[in-house]
Image (cartoon, rainbow, N blue to C red; front, top):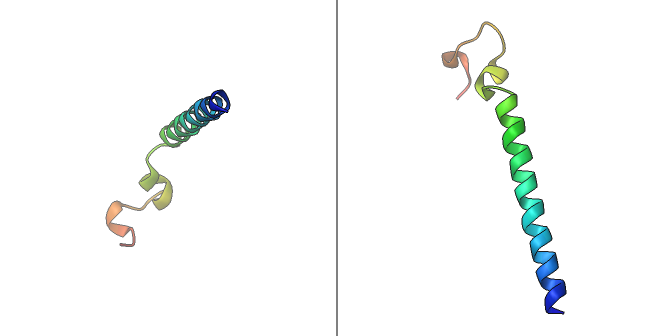
Length: 49
């Protein structure tokens, strides 16, 4: 039973690391989220608060 729990724990850690890495890379590749949200021609002052 202990080897099974260790195997599941290791798989969980690897999965969480992979998800965090993919999410980080995806957000970095998409650029500045404020620029994406505002679109062209708007400034940060035009954003709703």
